[in-house]
Image (cartoon, rainbow, N blue to C red):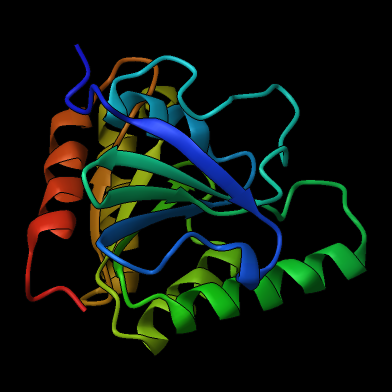
Length: 198
C-alpha cells in the first residue's frame, strides 16, 4: 500500500506563471531523461504509473506537480540530455529551471537521479548548481544499481560521494529490485518535515 494514499497529479507547467501556488512544502526530482526518474518516483510513492514511464527517454518536458499529502508536493522536473530536442527547447528548459529554483519558497529539497553506470554528467552538475545557488539540500539516487555487481556499485557510489563531498547525500537505488526505497522515502519525508530545510 502506498504511504501516500491521497497522492495525485495536480497540473503541468510550461511557464513560471503556470506553477501551482507557492505555499506548503515541495520536493523536486530532476535527472537526465534516461536515468530512470519516473520509475524512481513510482517506487518512492509506491504507486504504479504515478509518474508515467516511457521507453522513449525525454517524455517529461514540463514541470509536473503532484500532491502527496495536505500542503505537500512532489515536483517532476523536465528531463533532458538524451532527448532529441531543439536547441531552442533546451534553452527554454534552462530558463524554466532557473525560474523554478529561484522563485519557489516552498521548495525544501531536491532528488537528483543519476544512472550509477554513467556517473555525474554536465546536466547533473547544472542541477547541482541550481540547488547550491539557493542553498537547497540535495539527495542523489544512483539508479540501476542492479545493473552492476555489488563491488562495482559500491565503488561507483564512493566515487560520486568523493566528487560531491558535502554538496549532497548519496545512495544506491534500483526500481527493479526496490533496493534503497526505504532510505529514499525516509529522505523525502525528512525534506518535507525538516523545518531547517531552506
